[in-house]
Amino acid sequence: MVSLAVVLASPLIMTNIVTNAAATAFMFPVALSMSQRLHVSFLPFVMILIVGASCAFINPAEFQTNLMVQEPGGYTFADFAKVGVPLTLVVGVVVILVAPLAYGF
Picture 1 (cartoon, rainbow, N blue to C red):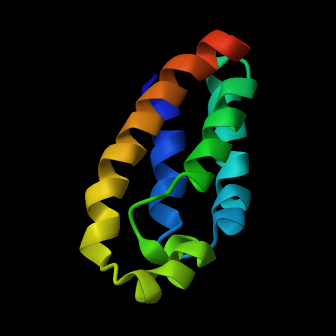
Picture 2 (spheres, rainbow, N blue to C red):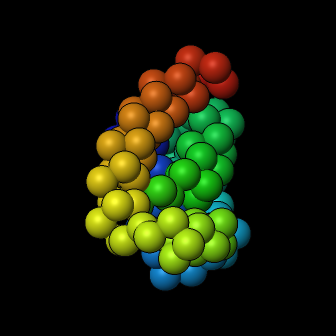
């Protein structure tokens, strides 16, 4: 479970610097290696990697659509963080619990 959390957190952090596709491409070999070393199925790691790269809601610069609505809506970075932190935590906990059940270790 700790390694799944690491695979989830890494692209979440990286998407603040690079695109979600680049974060996924960077973390894919790491996730594959982790699953092989733990002798478990790779599928939960892939699903968590994909979700981690796609659910970064904290920073408005992570998705173009957020930037498109930020100025017309009068949103600030703090507005995105207030909603994004709890939403990211909820999605993270759910995916870490569901992925091993759905795809098996």
